[in-house]
Length: 322
Image (cartoon, rainbow, N blue to C red; front, side, top):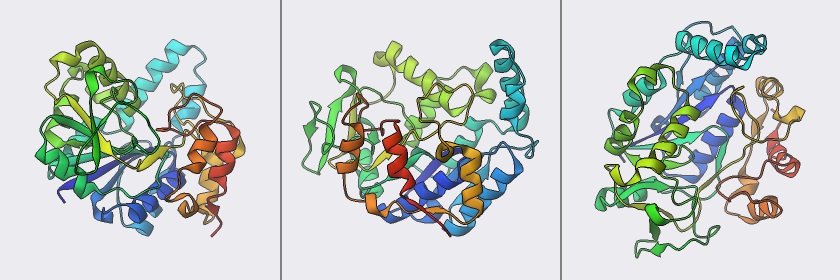
């Protein structure tokens, strides 16, 4: 299978370990196909990422190139004015890391298909990546495959294909089907992914973060959907393969809702990981009842887990001391 899985992670080695383990349990990917692009605010986080690679066999790529022992988030907190904080963040990021787009292009170069993920996810049902790439290769009208959307948890107006997958015309579809550039379990032809990335402003490409990349391309797709050189169809599996927890946030610019407790603090989770704690998601595999229960009282789409204390409690049950 001519595919690479790119996972983006920032100060979440424990969560990254759990995601990679779930991929090895619930997909046809080999460890060598999983490349983790990791950003570390301290040397301790950087060293913890190296442990993930040694234990699970995936490739760890450090986004940081300078100042690996400096906690950039704490420096940013010293800047009280929001405008100053944003400028300081941009300046430090451009000094302290390789250009993210450059890393994506480098690791996508040898393959024909690229799947994207973020560290705060779990693959809880089987994901057959060979099947997904076969569908994309045979049907140019499909612009992406989404493991985070399955007919077992959604009830959108899709067409069911005879090869056991759904399709929908994304231009007239409701969310989440109309969201056609995302990093939570997507699979793209490499050529389509690179076309997406080429739409980003050249002047700012070296300083773009993952959240900014996704936000800018989502905005562009809404404004210029009919002009995009991509197929009209979105596709995915009958059974949803993955979900995003929304457990915590690590960037000061993020507006993602989450439950703030010790168990969602990145530094506490780092201490747990260094002491030997790992994530065992197996009790959640091949089930959807826990997702339905956690999202029942919210308007959160089942592509994500509702960011509530109950979700933290369920997630924490997967923690296993070493």
